[in-house]
Length: 149
Image (tube, rainbow, N blue to C red; front, top):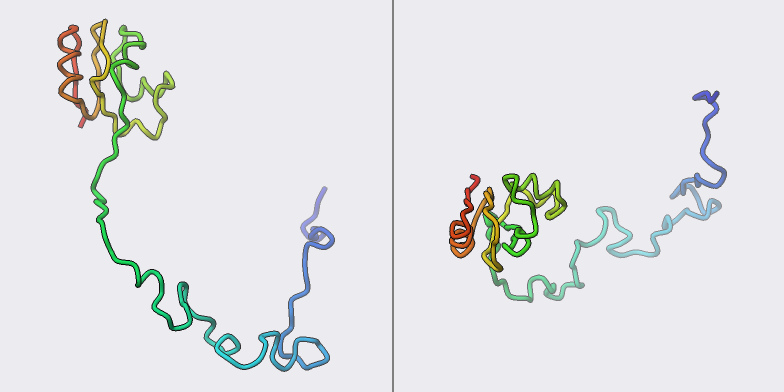
């Protein structure tokens, strides 16, 4: 049985810490391994990320452009061709598509059905969005398209 008092790190796993500024005989005295005078040797650290020695940094030289719409919703698209291969005895929902391995679990929150292909059977499909052609083809085949909020 292992006791807490007997637990030790593997041999070679721990290194001795550098004892800086403790005299020249330690090997880390005087300048404390920081080299000679200058910005890097001073307290307060180093320069910021992207600093180019006073030259205008790249991120400020390049022009700003574009815009990211943070409210945009990315949809997982699924064509009627793929749906036509599924059984029509059940109501097709995002959860069923995940169960059948058609879409990934992370994609079930935003599903859009597109109208590419044809439908032979009457499917009842629940999705977050439908294209106009998909709705038309589904209703023509006797199926139903229901939008999930």
